[in-house]
Length: 162
Image (cartoon, rainbow, N blue to C red; front, side, top):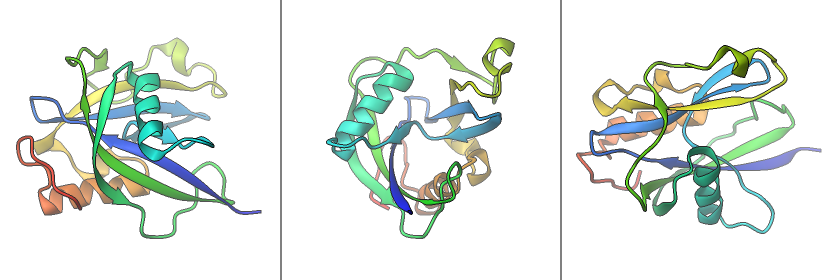
């Protein structure tokens, strides 16, 4: 039976105009994606994103404007019976940014990726001027980055809806 898998992601830029991304090791594969994750039963999309940011980064964030919702068919990268619906919001931190981040992609400790059945995650910043669709692993994230760049939705600190 096919299911819908609803995912919620946040677009967070710092004062240096860098986008926060998550480098992840999942099921023996490496992915760069936007921070966020799966909607749980009984949860709203904004509540989900606040929870996911707290779990992944330790940051308390405010969820701002809706930026994009998937408008095409996308199968899950992990289960070819699930259709992915991803929802993207702008987020801002409620506290000063003090994240443990890496400077190069997939900069895991060897122990984090030694077992392909385990999962690992590290955060990293990408400068707006250097950001491209190719930086993202997941198809919908690529679309969102392309739309942000095409529409120039990030201009300093200002966003607009896609």
